[in-house]
Structures are given as structure tokens and as C-alpha cells.
Length: 137
Image (cartoon, rainbow, N blue to C red; front, top):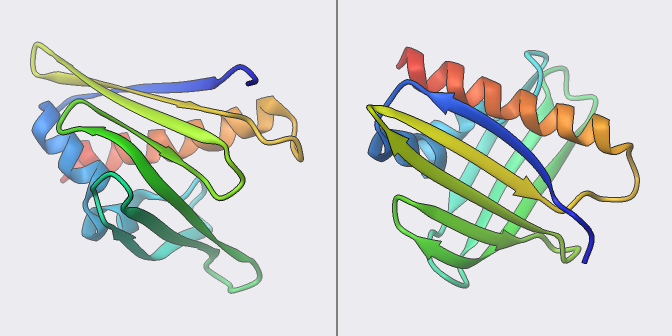
């Protein structure tokens, strides 16, 4: 297996709120995009082992879009979860609360179509967007 790429953010909120905002579809649609010209019109999340996560991501002008899907392999409620995408790549997300702030680490297997720096930048932008949303609501 190849190495993972990790992106991180520290959110000024407790882990319970951060977990909820990260996993609840009504919140996911508010932050799950890398760029303001994109949006996430729909999301669903069956948060159990074997359950499916799905999010639609598309350009606001309708020029491009894709469905992001994954199936959960492991879930430790409020702490971390791991899922596998249809192409076999895995992602692990960890939530660690310390002194009222929550550190989120997202580690993912890179794909081979795009340079790793670009992938890291995209995933980091989404996580930064999440931080901004979670802290302002």
C-alpha cells in the first residue's frame, strides 16, 4: 500500500460539535467543497460499518460535477472513522479534543491522476472550509 497524505486543522469547538458538523448531511452540504465557485448540493451519510457516505460536488455554473462515495470500515463514535472509496483507496479521519479545541487529521491514499501536492491542496482547502463553517455557526 502506498503512503498516505495527511491534511489537518484545529477547530475552535468541542469534539462533539466538530464530529456532528463533519458527519451530518445538513452540515456537510454547507462546507464540502474546495473553492467558492463550487458547492455540495446533496449529501447522505449512513454512519455505520458497511454504511455508505455520498456527496455530490459540482461547479455552481453546472459545468462540472462528480459524486464522492465511500463505505465505512470502522467507526469509533466521536473519535475517528475509516472508509474506503470505490477505487479501493482508504481515508481515516481523527478527532482529538484538547482544551476546548478539536484537532482534525484526514489521512488519505493519493490517486495517481493528479500530482500529490494538488491533491493535498484540494483536501486541505475543503478542511479549511469546514473549519471556517464550524467556527462561524
